[in-house]
Length: 420
Image (cartoon, helix red, strand yellow):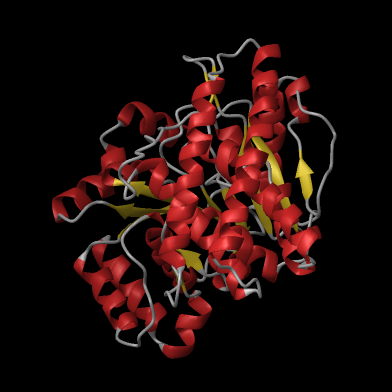
């Protein structure tokens, strides 16, 4: 049971329904969404790797739950990690079970020759299309949806959620689909507790992003960078900034640049910050607990796991500060490292106390070691961002359309032909 607390500059929507019967709540929620869907076209975008299709123990229940809702106009799967046509066909057949009266299903074959040709046309205009990964897949699928012109609200969630329930889907969509709320962007959040280990998860959020953003908020305030203090205060408001679950209006989505690396989630929050007034932004408690696959720390390999994740996120924030007037140098970043580390240790004490009272397993020494690694990863990010560097953001589809007025039609035809 969550509280009523509202903090920061955006609205927090709590899971107060948990005090009552969840099934009765779900019936009421879906009745509302069914009514909204008569006037608002709702689309679900699912970024999926081909390897996730092989894990039917996780993905089958997700699809079964989606199949039980009636308010979705479209389901679009952004398929990555499938270079072979046989893999695409298998994915198309697998996700085909989501097709229903009044609901279309399409699979965007990101690595297919037709979509790749569309990307090539964009690249010839010297417009970045990023590199293969979740961010690029989401960006391409969004372009296809804009080309269709039949989505008003778009929701996005991952395909590896072990604890999936369609209450999560309904709650993710409701704030933006509800015409009485006037929200344009909704970010999901949830607890991350392993039921088998009885331990806190979400290490990058808990041990890096949250203390780093808090440290930056304090530093920017002390140095008189008012705009950046407000920027980091906004990021600090989000309970789970790395959550992959969002919903937004199609109009907003058209104007957003999409990061193609692990900075995707924090980059998206930043894009929304510059395009939407705070009262049109919310976060919502989606589930009592959320379990999905976990990444290794990979301290020796900066191309994998949490190592790469922290480096990519750090690079985004460092680049953002430089582009907004902070003259970063080795001494300044060294100060950031020490401030982050001190702040993270304070958070670890709080996490330890929280775990103790909830009878969770908490390895405080291991957490402190992880923060030491993250501090080093932050310096690696600084070394990689020195000097001129290209952004890891793919330009918005509004920007692409200026240079390639026919690109929507070409992308639409590519995806439709693949799905014949």
